[in-house]
Image 1 (tube, rainbow, N blue to C red):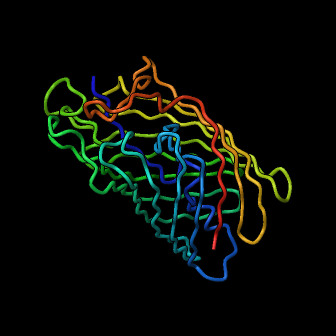
Image 2 (spheres, rainbow, N blue to C red):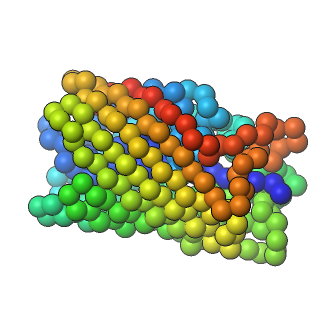
Image 3 (cartoon, rainbow, N blue to C red):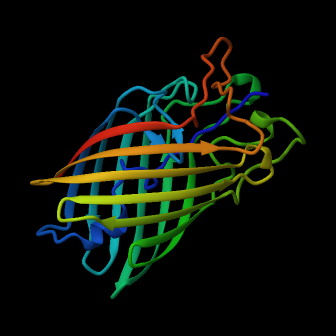
Length: 264
């Protein structure tokens, strides 16, 4: 069976600036930018650069009243998504903090320029969008990503087989995060996620992450993250982008990622 998957992550990996983090930072200007160099790009447990290094850039505007808008981009591998080289994300939303509580909503759109599934499967685009309500208390944040576009990351009857006419609108991703400072310079983070793909439950998956982040001062930080994903029936164990002769690998196997980030 041809396995097609595209996922981003705008905000699920160490590489994306979370809206609530922007809201909590004391900034002279509402505008900020970030650049990350990482040993690989992991999103929702999937190795989107096929184990190769990643360069990621983001731009954000965060109003003190809680409104924010931003964009973020990373290189990706064509071995992961056919003809893909870049993931480009756009997002906007609102978040409000009340003492230890927070609540908000974000809308995302993930764009993969030029990337499509094989012509034999109808040249399905990998582009997709999600709406994300979220709540937080203290070190915990819970987000629920819901796909509003016709397909989630190219999942449909053409790419997945089965009954004709099936789409994956309404797919969801449960994202639970724990972030706790250890001291003035070190922070520990933990994550659990569960992806439910509508009409294609055989491709559902779960993922976990544990990370340590060190603040180096002057906007610099470095991180070490362990990630792993798994599915019920080893669906992704022999993954390819669907192209004839494409490399086969296990993109959800456990792995470590090292990153260095600068926030301007």
